Image 1 (tube, helix red, strand yellow):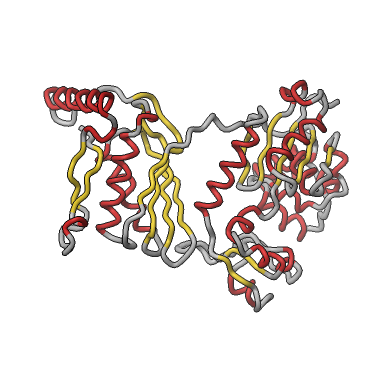
Image 2 (image 1 turned 180 degrees about the horizontal axis):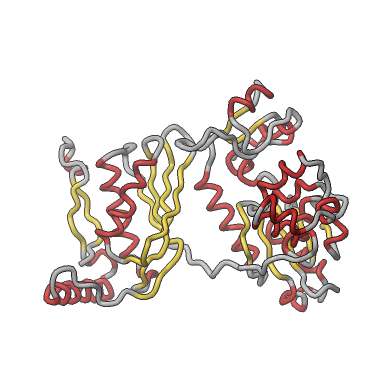
Length: 395
């Protein structure tokens, strides 16, 4: 038994499978994820049939269509991917694993603490992980993160791969470096230099790799030598989000009003327990199909509605199309909110603190709808019910 037992969980083409939805028959044909709206025109994950035409992830759209004119382009679904991947990670955590997500469809965890729970053998942990995720998952185990990921990449659906040491990967292609974000840029240059396998890469002097590729080259030398950085499991997460589905698709000023409502509702949730928000995820379901998602990390933890609206309002301009639904979710919490900063004088801060306390007590006695405010949504509408809505009041 090796000193460290790292298990890698790989769901091939995870983003493409989620985006295909009920159209999974498309995966048997040349298919790829279309470029995300507003970003560089490069395709996402591709199907096996598309790879047969030489189409690869990250290829420019024009080149991909030139290689495969009948390539089917699926609209990306970052919101669906985030939800499905979070659910998969929660199932892994349900077996006791402290999971480090690499990217959607790829995660690692240290299995040493789980061995006694699952028969004292690595195979028992792998069986538990398969039962949690599903039969299509590919599982690998090894002494380091890189070795485990490489093992999972060559594993089969119902046959996990266990690699005892990094030297066992000497015959594997150098393209395995693309499985790590930090070394992905090295795969193509090394192949052009005639270095085709990990064993050949291990024979290259460390100083030469550092001189040619910098920190990425040093990390690649460590990976093939059997050394890797420690795992950094994600902290325990709480699902706290609010969704608004307006009667009509919205954009512009109406979308800003919808964002205000979501911020008010999120701050009014009892589950927040007075904590500030360090990072949030703003996402939308688009009228033209597909979804949009943006993760925003605040410069400092916030619990102020006005400052959050200013921080998030600019991101609405990135929406590529009108939204059918808007969602705001808490990604990371900060410390509990103190009495707040005084913007002008101490008297104003004290009055706001007393108002917040009164609202808190009213909600504790009568529920979240005990304190509401009127928010204008569409003042020019001919339908009175659409001119304004009631939203939770924050002092």
